[in-house]
Length: 345
Image (cartoon, rainbow, N blue to C red):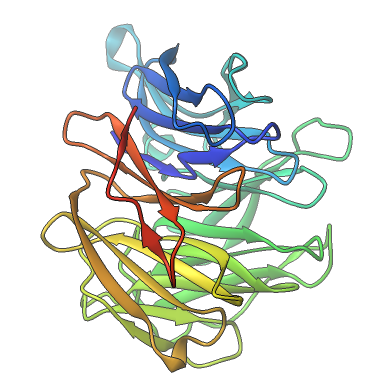
């Protein structure tokens, strides 16, 4: 089972943490000192019955884990629910796994609940999204008191797993999801406001490939693989899709912003059709000027990850076929130069 979302993060103390999951729980490696390249782990945090697990880090640096769990009982009954746990600080234990329930009470419909996706807003409020049995989008979020609100039906139809949420610096949250008729978007017009649904776009995204990144104050850019795998596409609501080229395989794209040669740039990473990690660089919101792609030649069994370390260097993470992660860091030099030395965790 692949851990989706932000599986490589930078903590409040500047130390990086990497996570890998399987059906029995979560494995974690932690940097000994900020940007040291020395790691401890893995620590293991059990939770049985997981079919999917995703991670998201908030502006408070807390890391939230949302999983879809199935538990078998005598007589053949299988209970399906969403579980949640938190890591508050680098190297500290993960909290106990708490159930967020299931929007469906009937067992057959409950088992059709999709994989969760999550995001936290500027105040640290957690938003959890999942496709329901009818193909629409469900939302459950924390209330202002910290108590979880009820599941809310945001409607929609024919959704394909998983949705792609994003929180913007003006306090809003929005989410897109692939459907058989295009890409559907829900967005808040103001913090704490209701989610308004727009019409599906004519674009068709490969399910599971999407990622969102805030590229200007209050404005996200979505990146995904074209459903025909003809290349990567960038899209900002209200604009036209921008083809970025590349040779995408399956799996999610990773994205991070950084300064390169004095320019605000976006770095993308994806698993290519041959199973190796491909990295692309472009000016932020200047994708039409070209994206420079290069193949690292390094195998990646799951989706790659991108983050910046305590010194602001871009760090690329991959997981090997044996499930163990390794990372490589940006070196000094023009553009984005990655070190030839990979750190095996």
